[in-house]
Image (cartoon, rainbow, N blue to C red; front, side, top):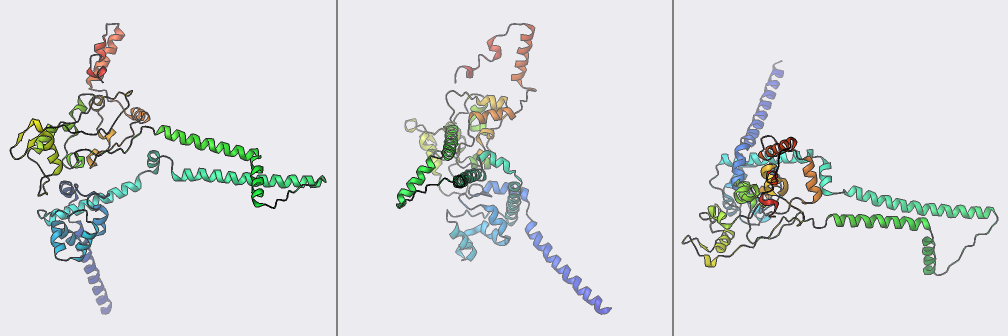
Length: 426
């Protein structure tokens, strides 16, 4: 009994020791606060990194999730240059694999701050992976068009139908010869010595086959009609259009990291037909005192372009109008002249967010056309968007006008919005 008791005691000690190490290891990974890490990450990391996509630096999600050495990651984030100078093999390899530029040193971040960032990256990246797995495949198929399976399936049907037709022709030819032999009629077999002549004779025989020729004509009509339909449907559809602008304006920094509201720059979107391009004076509200990134040692070349266009001298803080010249911005979103679109009607009256049409601009380093902006796309949006008419001055006015019409009272065009600027001035 004493031996058994001793064995159980030793076993229990081993289990407790292993459990203790496991708890310590878990606490070392779980000590970060993901909620606090989100703010630190967006303020310091989003200019160069995304969780799931490569930017200036690599995608951080898979890298940090795979690397479990938090002590090394903390040293790398706080002072990667010191690790590389010290000859750390892992640091040198990471630097050689990602030489888009030197990573910024974040010496101001404490060990706790870095732990919070690591916790946020791992938690958020895991959530992104789970969301991607749970997303229905039909949604992707609806946006990307017919799947490869459907296309290959149609090709397979055509090939099988062609093979079936050839086999049926062979069978029909064999049956015809059997019937002729049964009736005592000889079947003339034409012997051809020349292979080229034989192939030519076989080709002429196929051309005389009305079923085969008809099958090919039908296939050609279907393929040609499909190609023409797709070509016409995508005419003047510029989804993904991303021109190079004269000044690189990072929306992911201004609207994403700094959370500047869209209407601060595009004030017209809430009170007129056009969203309007902000004047450079709006930029100077901030950039009169900000000429570089917080982590940069030299002034930004892109901000310098704003100064040049305005004739502004940062040394004297004075403007020279003789040196000023307009910036030739390139328009991205274009609608045909026959289409009328009013921004204020959608944003202020309809209550839509800018991202509904323009996509997640707060994540775009360079803006591109996110939506197709086709008539079908607009109609589908109008069909699924519910109108919130309660407490809306526009619809309250419409109700009053309808009540006047029911009572037989006089109603002028002005009451129906006839004196609004956008009615005449496109």
